[in-house]
Length: 229
Ligand code: DC
Image 1 (cartoon, protein in one colour):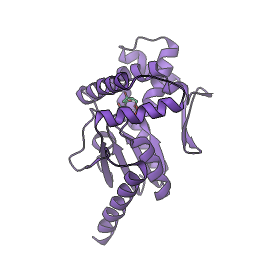
Image 2 (spheres, helix red, strand yellow):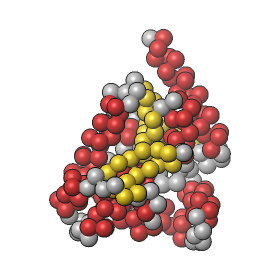
Image 3 (cartoon, rainbow, N blue to C red):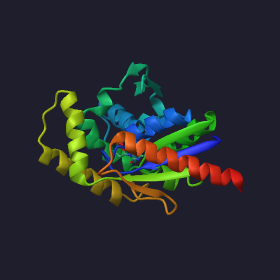
Image 4 (tube, protein in one colour):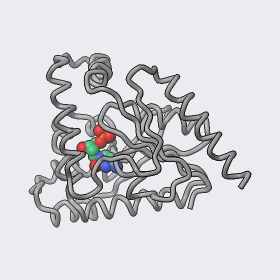
């Protein structure tokens, strides 16, 4: 198991992905974007045309496809059966369908196992998602839960979408984010919630550099305290 595990959970567009990637860089750690794993299984299932409500069919897709995850020039790379899927997994229809995969208990079990294998292969990791501190790594060294007001998260998502050329209204983006929050918080397996020992950070009024600085200082403080015990 990795010598340092930092988990960052939080709702959609809370800034956890960018924060996790930059924090990993500063700590010399490997970054794991677990949302990309759920998105990849979603895309593969859509391509295979399986019934998204059938846990067995989803599990079969996960078992038969070859998923490869990595990071290149600060971006998550992902291939399915050797085909680059980094852009496709961000499609709005994939985002919308990911909730079926996120609610399939057996698929979650398998993905958590893959996440733990990743941790076993790396000296230090920063991993982000919804259940990293609660289910995947309950004994993580440092756990964060990032929050931000829904309107601020919608603004952030809109500027991301604008840079990709999409012009959805702020109201529609906020509504989608709130629907995803509801589905993430209310599912039976791996629901979105802070671990009892997570540090909750509200990023509404912070820019990304301030968020990373804050997390980095907290990691250093907690690790120093542990090493002095
Ligand atoms: O973080 P994201 O938007 O890329 O996540 C995509 C989907 O995967 C979203 O529906 C939540 C789900 N997810 C999850 O259930 N558990 C995780 N650890 C990560 C993501």
